[in-house]
Image (cartoon, rainbow, N blue to C red; front, side, top):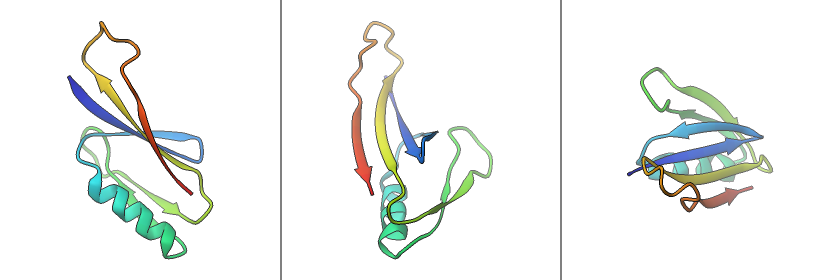
Length: 82
């Protein structure tokens, strides 16, 4: 079973592999400092995308368990930054 992280920014979803600890810290730091660009890496290869994060921007993290078709309601957990 694998964990895929879903980052939702202003209603748009980005799927990310583990680990995301440094990325979460970079996003939170950009928001705390009044705004800044953070590079969001792709799930598979490529340059990623730069997103401008700012205070008040809706940002939600979810973790999704994938790989076990028997458990469709695999628990999702969410963290929210505003």
